Amino acid sequence: MSDGRKRAADGAFLLALMLYILAGVFSVPVHGDEFMQMAMARDTFYLARGQLNRIAFQPPVERDTEQYLRLINGTLNKTLIGVAWMLDGRDAARLPGIFAWAMPFDWNQQHGNVPADDALHVARWPSAMLAALGVIPVFLLGWQLRLRSLAYPSALLYALHPVILLNGRRAMMEGSLMTAILATMCWLLAMIIAEHSATASGFMRRIPLPLRYAILGLLAGLAMAAKQTGVVTAAAALLAALLAGLARERSWRPLARAGLAAIVAMFTWFALNPAYWNNPVGAIRETITARSDLLTLQTQGNPLAFDSLGQRLQAIITQPFLTPPQYYELPNWAGVLDTQIAAYQQSAVDGWDWGPLVGAALTVLMGIGLLALVYDALHRDLVAWAILIWTAATFFSSLAVPLNWQRYYLPLILVGIILAAAGLGRLVVRRVPEEKPALSAVREGKPAA
Image (cartoon, rainbow, N blue to C red; front, top):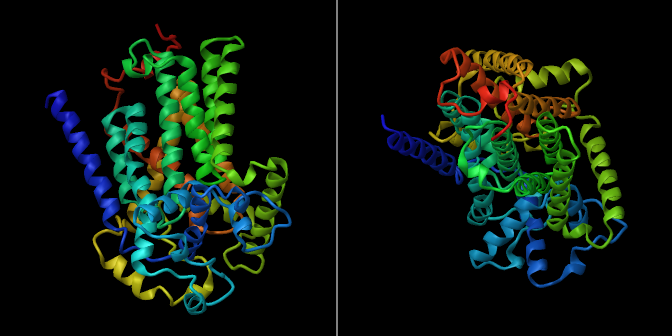
């Protein structure tokens, strides 16, 4: 097959996967956080009207208020919901109220905290479209590691993973978070290959070095703005970029470039968080307190809370491929979604229900991929080092998760997909293809021309 036909096939494959993700937007079961994100979309209207006083940090902060939700959540999804709401010709008055988790679903419905189906569908499009676009960076991540032998399985596992589909299609922060994480790591690997390979693609070479790092900072800032846990990937990417730069040039310049990326990341996050503009120190301090109190509240008396380190390690091993989708976390939702869950599971758009055997095989492949990357890293492969730094950061952050809530493990699932694809690629393709431009040069430590 000619190169042109191969590229056309690649494009058709990615388009089909993106359409599959979008096909389940209307049928995925609801979640209370969707209603909360919709309520927070009022901030978009405040900004459009210039009502910054409605968003500015003003202590004291009370639980379950607009200000409280503003501090403990990311901003990208709620802002995009507001934009979609405006484009659909709806006004802020039609947004739902703040969902009261302590009250039954019926009570919230009676008090205007549960939107109608058509309104919920409008709010889901931003997250779902971003989740669908995530197919592209996950494909490119696999490509940068081992060409099509990793690109295709990586994209396929992402687009058919039932947990990614469930959470990415909902009007929640996870769609924007996943895509921002993947885009950050994809750009990082492209930077490393361009800097350390004499045969790297000309596209990245034409971008000035400081601009490359600025774009990395922009993407890292978007990951942090999507959800506060995005800071883990942002920190890992900046560290990997710094170490890769120092491996090529032992001087102050890599430190300066990494510093530039960090400044751009913080500026991006700050620009997308107007609640912090008037009092950043006070708002950050209150955010840390509110997040800590929320985790304490979530774990107290919760049967899903972990009692030991062993349980946390078990979750890290089982969440990527051995755990079925978790449609809700709180016991008072039991029975509320039975009809929706049954209909969704019987549809053709709920992903690949691979069962325990295939899940175990994917988990083994994940381990093989990890060992393969360790082997490459020991042979001076900077791309492998970058993936390992991302893996380690995600592992330790997942180890800090205090309860078995599946959504909190989505960044780990993304890492698991790349590792499983890497393991499969090593078993299918015994050597690195000659057309692969970067890795052989990186292994030899050759700087870019």
